[in-house]
Length: 210
Ligand code: SF4
Ligand code: SF4
Ligand code: SF4
Image (cartoon, rainbow, N blue to C red; front, side):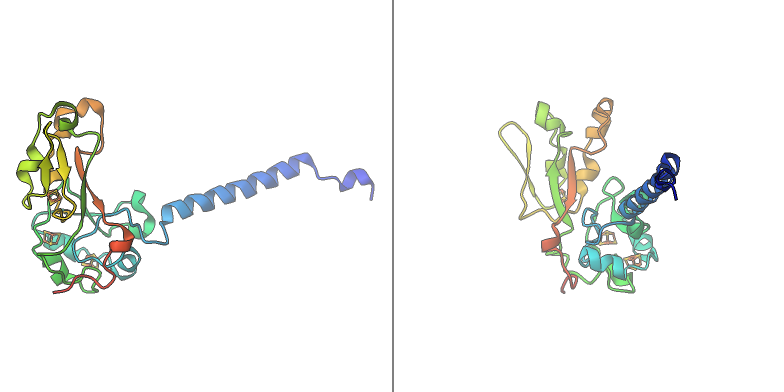
């Protein structure tokens, strides 16, 4: 065979490379959408929820917890949260806040949301964000006034400071924060105070205790 004919056709090589590249990109895209092996620890779950990876394994996406929640604080996981988290219960503090009524744990058939002690359960931890009106003007104390657990102090310039010991992540501060109303021109997605998930290290593998 002439040496010339053993050379790869540039056109064939390019096509094969393109196909391989497309498959790789599709795989990466799928992996990214599929979700993380740690079980989406960035999502805030209802009180009593087991560890993030355990939660995805146990949750049936049956919607019982969302249906029974009287404050409507439980939303549904979106595709952007990862395919595995789709339709799983995710706390959405723009819809409501949690009063630790225990109903979601009572109806969960799998123990994804386990029984918990309302006095000690923690959902997450509130964090003041760059959208907070008081950071710039000191003119808003809404979250300080609304917190049922007196977990938000004010500094001398009226800026909120979250007490991590007292905050249980109920989300009332995020619900009532008016930053999105007064600062809609800034186009901020986050409110001036938001509840972040507790770290995976402090999550409760066996759920809460009673
Ligand atoms: S404890 Fe009650 S208020 Fe809180 S998420 Fe569960 S059902 Fe909703
Ligand atoms: S009740 Fe339990 S199993 Fe059903 S969607 Fe809620 S967490 Fe998942
Ligand atoms: S989430 Fe907000 S309202 Fe609830 S305890 Fe923490 S600081 Fe207070």
